[in-house]
Picture 1: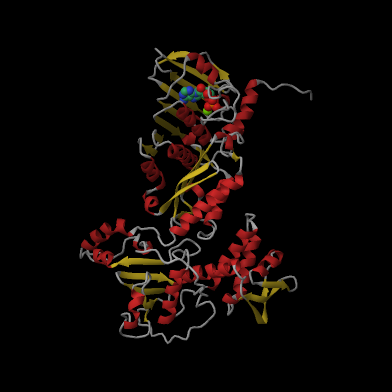
Picture 2: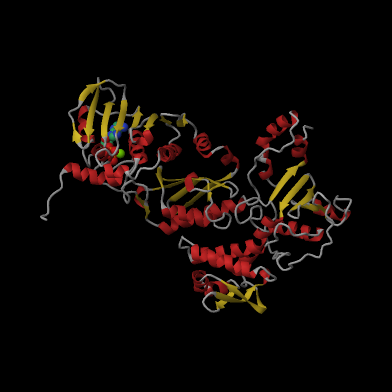
Length: 608
Ligand code: ADP
Ligand code: MG
């Protein structure tokens, strides 16, 4: 076939494939244009999941008749001064959006420029541009896009359900709205208003988008390095989500969904969140335009920093510092739920509010830092407990004394410790302790898991993980691909104290284990580790993988729910938690303890 120049409408359709992949992309482009036009109010109507109608109306600067004719042409933009692709201060700059949308839909733009005596309308259908005609409208612009992709029916097949498209459109508006609290936004479908935000302060806008738990369950982030400034808020690990949809990242006011940046978030939260859980964050990076290239993605979702490693380091460090500082805080939901308890109590119901069981109150004083203490978790080694536990029929184990559960006299200084003095264990799972001004309930498995993990990490970072050779090496049967995955990492595992060797096709033999894990459960641990490694979809960095292995080990070997503990063991666990960084959350981000002050308890009983 001879080479030929493609006709304009075909070029536009091809470009449209990249710029407007799906309806939410149209919402994004049109809303960005409205923001660039200085709008203070933007109304978006979205019908039929965006297939039937997408309409974006703004009160921005508007366009003249001549502007309209140019605006719908490809590569026509008012946003680049000279040829400078570096200093880009607007959301748009490629001059492709309107031409692309006009190429694949039926588009009408009605606009009235500042001080213009009348409005004009221009229509473009499947790339065919009509002459502008006079119209009526106050200052601003309304772009209506009907029958999206009618000109490229193949695209229609890729659209998702109406609800999924609605959700994406709402998410798109929220992203832009987060960066522009000075603008009011409305997104309505034929059924409901999905986003409805008045002009707000930045704090109020953040709360409106992130939910009310975010304000109390997050910490402020602020850091600066070599021309890059980071600010915003990020959630405590206890506030997390199964999807990354609550992660809002901005570079110079532009929402980005950049893999490098989300990778930095993952790295920062790696120790405190289970794989597959995501923190809530609203983070803004500000830098001089020449330190970042925004022209690397057709939909401008990704950016390229001049110094990506520096930016990654800035984010990871700032978040880790914040997480460490907040380590002994967790989501405070109790306060909000109290009124409902009291109300229900009035009706004779005794049930606890939904939030209560998960409520964790801030520890009064921050725990002392780990300092020089190097405790080895007390419960990793013993498989069985020698406790002569006397469980009551309700499942309450009065620690030593079957009758009196009050702390004993020598406990006086333990009472003043943040996690108090152990009173009892109940359901073989929870430790109840008394503090000077209230009570603490500890989830022993979650707490111990964190302690083992932190201990393993400390050992690895200092003298290396203490190893115990097995007197009788343990043979573990595994599916061949799992065995292969495990043995592929044999060297790394050995550096963590786990020595595995091949044993036929379908098994491995374990010769050494970390001392802290000795005593049992090795087969199950190895089976799970191998499965994890075989199924890992993400290629993790070495240190990420090692941490993951340690976390898996810790999880397997911590005091399981169901183990009896005597008072001494319980108190030792509490003391160790006080000494261990990040012990307020388990490795999966769940709280390890709940604290209720006497005042809280009195309020629960309506005494106050
Ligand atoms: P870009 O935003 O990259 O410049 P677009 O195709 O999105 O490209 O828009 C082309 C031009 O049309 C813009 O540069 C701007 O001058 C004008 N324009 C588009 N939308 C609006 C609007 N809502 N209000 C005022 N002007 C607009
Ligand atoms: Mg644009």
